[in-house]
Length: 164
Image (cartoon, rainbow, N blue to C red; front, side):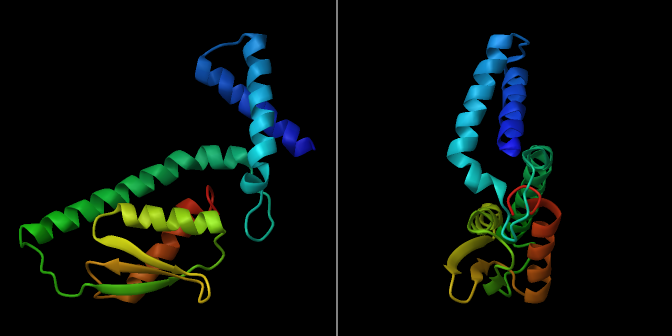
């Protein structure tokens, strides 16, 4: 109950900041909207796969960092594809790579798939829940272990703090 009230108050303050207002009526409206959101979405937002509570403040702080990292991956993928299109980089090893789902929640798997697929040169083929794998096609699979390591490092550094 204490976490619900704290989350509702935090969302109410965020609402006031968004409106750039210090009116108590705006605070009351923001807390009410926050309480409704927490009641409707709280179960989906609160628990990580291992049952550890993820603080909404932590998510709010790390979300811009996560977006920046996704944007950087998009830029790197775009540059790589541009070099391949103008034939400055060869197309030698396209292929399919399986990545273990690991500790990701269902939402975390969806976000990992989306973040990876947004970068040119990669596309999600399948989520294999039985084998607990994500299956991607990449434009360059010359070192699949390096791709797996990079995928896991991205999750640990940026995504886990926002979308476990």
